[in-house]
Image (cartoon, rainbow, N blue to C red):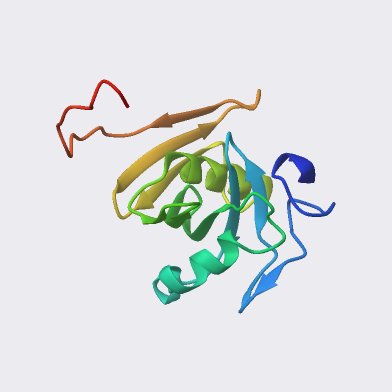
Length: 153
């Protein structure tokens, strides 16, 4: 949870970044193998992710760009999540985004316990944040495309 592991342009508290864009303030930043910033908001339906996502992803505070998560707490162990993936855009689901959001919610004491159910447009994941720092993700698998790759790729 160190600022230079995200990385951020300058030293600051990653639990509550001194950062504001539009009406979104003080997100949580975490690196779970890739960098994420998590905004907890009251109404996920009001987010124009296509408009705000790229602005945050490319903000100068994030020199290597960042994945952007908007989360709405639904109950003491359920969260609804929308994700803008760095270099990709809007995605229906994101395992690392769900993991980052769960860790942030636990660290900010927004949910009870260490297990959270994350609902995304692409489905639901169960995320468990272990005391040793490991994250266990459980969810369905679905084939969406079958094909062959060129052996020279």
